[in-house]
Length: 138
Image (tube, rainbow, N blue to C red; front, side, top):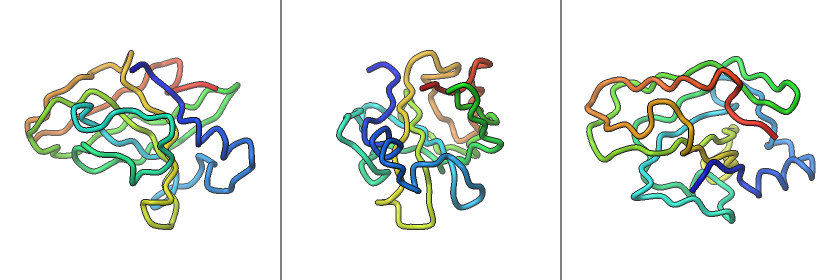
């Protein structure tokens, strides 16, 4: 699979759904989850975080999110003490809101051209450095 924006998130954007915005901080906003693609396969029909499997460690918030000329960017993320396990080959970005995880919209699936992936966790920290051109674009 190559990088993809989830179609259901695009639909939410076009319909003006309030929980499609990438703003927020702390308990809401744009988050990133490291994923083992042996346990999760991208599916265009997936809409919410509850569809994911194979998540390693704790998803991290992307802070200082910007949206300029159709490009989304933000601060790099550090996953702390990711338990040893299978290779992690992808990152899934999702929009977290104050509701249950079954309402957190999947935004984009990244498995190509991500520096540092795949990575084999060993119990230490994993740092994801976003491309200087931005995380993804519309």
